[in-house]
Image 1 (cartoon, helix red, strand yellow):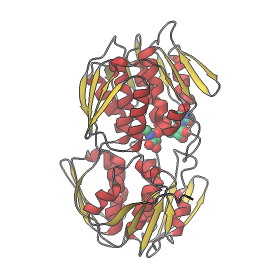
Image 2: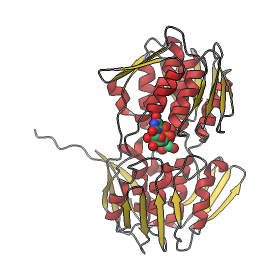
Image 3: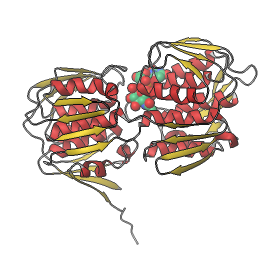
Image 4: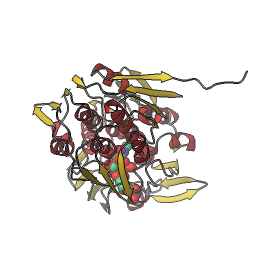
Amino acid sequence: MNKIIVNGGKKLNGEITVQGAKNSVLPILVATLLVNGISVIHNCPYISDVNATIKILRYLGCKVTREGHTVIVDSSTMCRNDVPDSLMREMRSSIVFLGGIIGRTGKAVLSTPGGCEIGLRPIDLHLSAMEQFGASVTTENGFIICSAEKNGLCGTRIVLSFPSVGATENIILASTLAKGTTVISNAAREPEIIDLADFLNSCGAKIHGAGESTIVIEGIASLHSTEHTIIPDRIVASTYMIGVAMTGGKVTFKDVIPSHLGPIIQPLRESGCSIFVKGKNVTVSSQKQLKRIKMIRTMPHPGFPTDAQAQMMALTSIADGTSVFIENIFESRYKHIGELLRFGAKIHAEGRMAVVEGVKALNGANVKATDLRGGSAMFLAGLCAEGTTEITEIHHIDRGYEEPEKVLEILGADIKRVKEYEKTTE
Ligand code: UD1
């Protein structure tokens, strides 16, 4: 059992380059299946979700090698179209293999993903889209079988009732090599959708309008090999920006895409931080007492990201005044509140709403990471708390943050990871 120990009270100062985006690298690694050849993907972070994706690619028969932050996938050796339960369960977003596998082979057999730490996470939109492409969808012994082996996938018009990120990605993946043209209405507009389309287009795909609500995909016969660099992770950048705000330091985030950070910059400014954007660099500094943020409503992009809700809640717990949160994306994404209370935060939650009354200071506590972003809220709270914080169940954090303790230590935090071995009876 690993844990992270933070001695709070140190300001964050300096500059960092942010890791590649988890939510881009996962669908792009899946998209390499469509290439039927070699893809070279740069800026892949060392996080456990990338490891889980690579495991599935290898299970499917692909040859995958890693050279530092570059992952090389040769999908010409792909020889299976199923993903077993044990691998599906390692990562909830493995549902995106549905579009990649059926797009390449005409049939996909995946175990039902089930719920996860932040809610039920249904996949009805993904499955309905496959049916609209002409695939049959059946379930057998906990497996979903999607097959378009008879007639192939046929381009179609798909209207999403909610701009689901994963469903939009699955539709893009399934339609790239389908017959005819596909139009997605009410598509997700997240930057990671643009990155996926950029990768596929650089392989020869014809995807227009990614980043907008309507995406048009003209199906083509085959793709060719390419190299691609993953965009910087806007949620990881946001997490550390919030950390700077909470500790009262000054940090420059180099080579980010500032427009991706707009939904975070606005509330950070409302809390009293200074944020200076110059080209691809964003500098955050904070010296005074933070002010409350009146209202945070999580929304699909370009609204405030649900993936930064827990971190912003940690910030408002030490701001002057009362802040209100409304979580509109996931139904049970407040598990971190119980842990924030251990630091002395004052938070009341009911349904999708949480009310945070800022306190003067947090006190170090023994807490656990309840989920990936909830876990990052724990190290943020620990950074500004008085005394020592111990965070357990950090495997959740490792799903999306590459060595956060090293990044934060470079910026001046007193933080370390310790390995604790299970006691054995000999
Ligand atoms: C992706 C991100 C995740 C982020 C989320 C919302 C990845 C790997 N993960 O997750 O970090 O928090 O977007 O920005 O990119 N829904 C349905 N039916 C469906 C699909 C979704 O009801 O078939 C609902 C979900 O339950 C949820 C909402 O739609 O309430 C948003 O989910 P979605 O956008 O699909 O999120 P993910 O793609 O799973």
